[in-house]
Length: 513
Image 1 (cartoon, rainbow, N blue to C red):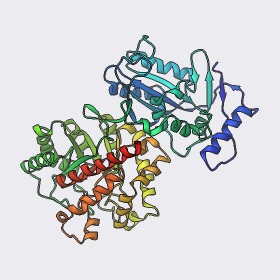
Image 2: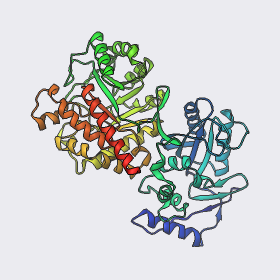
Image 3: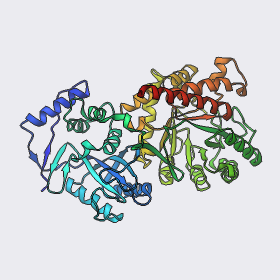
Image 4: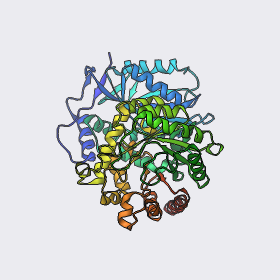
């Protein structure tokens, strides 16, 4: 029989997490209902940590997640991905670490058995404790229960000494507790501020980005630490009707020449789009989009200059995304975040490539309708709606560690909304963090390039005259926390990005001294 101790939530309402944790801890220590019980609840929420440092570490994670979902462990949320130095036994390769939240009907010891079988099936064998392993799966939390047996202790006894466990664990939470179970988890820390206070005492965000632990996004055949510098994405529209450069690059020769130019000017990524998403644009079919896209994509992917660069496909069609990735695209950039093709999220999950989820209401033809331009607090509502889209993506099998977020400047926005976004990027992250620290840490892309709101502000009717205004937006965005800027004019914006990065580095150096 599985003997557990259940932490019983208080029935009182508290306004803050500190009060929640204090009340719960008191209930655990003093309540007469705190007794040994057997689990009969049909479903429990759990946290499982993942680690790997043997073989293809990312593939090991993907396979483990797939096996868990097939074994009655339904994953609902993913932490970020971390590359970490080995602990305890230091003479071994670096680890990948992450964690997931899931729901399961398995009892705690049944769950342990399933995880150990997955480890065994994936090639883990008994060896040096804390030594190399293809996969390591540990139960951190199981419902509101503490478990003590000869083979299982929950909460996991080494949570409190391992930053590489605490960092992904924190990603699965938000600054506001989303349920009583999460409030229970906070109370296990025995601190009034819960796990948030414990993480801060451990070092918190200051631990991320050094040699011991880096937050990374898997892309192409490597791991990208996007905190090191801002990336520049060059726009390559192979459309006849885009608002800025429609018709200029419809031929393969012209498109390749432009891609080559952008790379020479400092582009890290080339974003190829074959369907206009300007306001009031009419939608073309996936077949027509593929006819425009594929010859250019294959030619650009085959350029010697493209070696080491990333190619993104700008599409909201799952069929186009799938075909593009098969022919060399490394990212999918979806202005609808899965809303315009019901298959998109599942398809991208299977492609296992990064996914740019942008905020937009409606579709390009309707996004500037009056009903789609109604906001009480634009940054707060964008954050809530982006989080909702990312949550759908996670439930479809796209881990949060493969998501890039885009607040959608110019899409379903008035001029004042676009300005609010540019000065409010930290507010968008903070609002997302209320629900998910992991999603709030995701790389953020902004795309203000030559947009109509800049024409309104600067009285520049022609889109090509808006490059100086674009540079101003890019500067504000990078200083506000953007990690990728999507632009038409690569050369000038790349210079602006370099200056901003130098300023941020200088500020960081001053703060450390």
